[in-house]
Amino acid sequence: MSTATTLLIIICLGVIGYVAGRIRAGQLVQGAYSALHSRPGYYGAFVLVWTILPSAIVLAIWLAVSPAIINNQVFHSLPQSIQDMSAADRSLELSKINAIAGGLSDLTDEDRQKLESGSITMREALADKGVAIAGEVDEYMPAAAEVYNGLSSASALYRTILVLLVAVAGFVYAYYMISPKMRARNKVERVILGILIVASSIAILTTVGIVWSMLSETGRFFASVPPHEFFFGTVWDPRFAAAGAEDSAGQFGLIPLLAGTLYIAFVAMAVAVPIGLFAAIYMAEYASNHLRAIVKPLLEVLAGIPTIVYGFFALVTVGPFLRDLSTQISGIVTGNAFAFIQAQSVLTAGFVMGIMLIPFVSSLSDDIITAVPRAMRDGSLGLGATRSETVKRVIFPAALPGIVGALLLTASRAIGETMIVVLAAGVAARLTINPFEPMTTVTVKIVNQLTGDLEFTSPQTLVAFALGITLFFITLILNFYALYIVRKYREQYE
Image 1: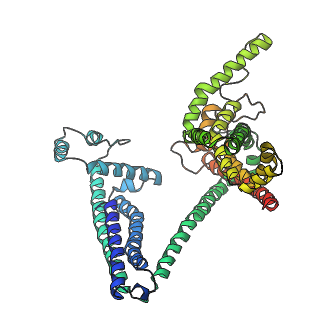
Image 2 (image 1 turned 90 degrees about the vertical axis):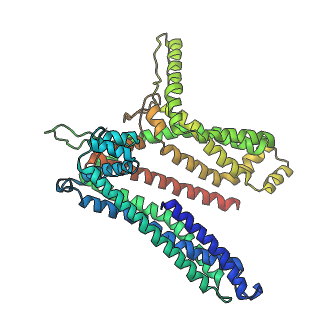
């Protein structure tokens, strides 16, 4: 039985338990619901929780643990030569076996007869089922795949039986636990509180896990490369030098990448912030309701466009346009036509990224401005101020803490952008102040260093974690500064 079917059965049992719990609570007091400690719905919810929650936990644990156990059993059934391989090679072999196992389950009897007769190969049979295998299909792989399928089928059967038994046991236990004096509401609310705590803890634990993994790998990187060479180096050349060279680990200077990241983000913010803020002020304070209902959704369509599309737009349209425009301008001014703006440049990437960020600024700022109490507007207008003076001296200062938060979100989005930079600004790590030349960012180099089948054993790959933790601390500093600004102005306008 599939996992989805098992979940559906559990949910149906929970719904039945909810109805049965309500009915039993009413029967115990013979319809006098005032004699119950809690409302009837809480008794039904009590049975529902005991039916669904324990069985769902068992199901989740089984799904998390069983693949590792099955892979371990399959691994021990492989030839000794395969077991003696490195960890990366063993993982590749197991992935092939898993792919073959998925294809074998779809083979028909006719396909198996063709395989036995030798009229088709295993690779051809799997290809007909849409399963592509990288590399050769060795003789031991189909047998190992059959073992994998057998273990998976047995695991699914035992899982279904165990989960349904737990669900039924929880149903029976909760049903007979119901009594008029039972504090059903308290028990259900404690479960809900626990779920809320777990949900909030997931975000915290995820953050801690991400930071810890980056810090641990960054420590390994700094064991090979001195921190001062990374943080203050001006040359980014992570390639390994030739054998016998003095510098065998390359150069990992952060300065060119950090400068490119901040430079492109600054250009993007210079485009997005004025346009987005002016659009937000217009929609919140000047536009009619009919016009606002049309313009705001149209403006927010920009937020739904994938960043790769913006990258294509920059590469195909904006970059060539700026290059041709600079050629015409130089021809008019100097008489010698040349392109002083390259198609891939800081200006191209920053401009297109700024267009992408306009909805973030405008939509968030618009919601913040409209949240300013109406009484502040009416009071300012009643004292004789014009609408523009009211916006400038009353509404904007009152909304400034929220606007700072919106700009922080926008800046974080700009710093973390990758695809637009790859296509519009290039991948060359250069240190320049000319916005008409290409530069690259930290995120682009993280992708470059982790692209391909690599092991995290060399400074080439470990440097990606050092770059990641650097971006993390930059964002953290921005958050601290924004919090300071928000608190400062909130004290003035509350």
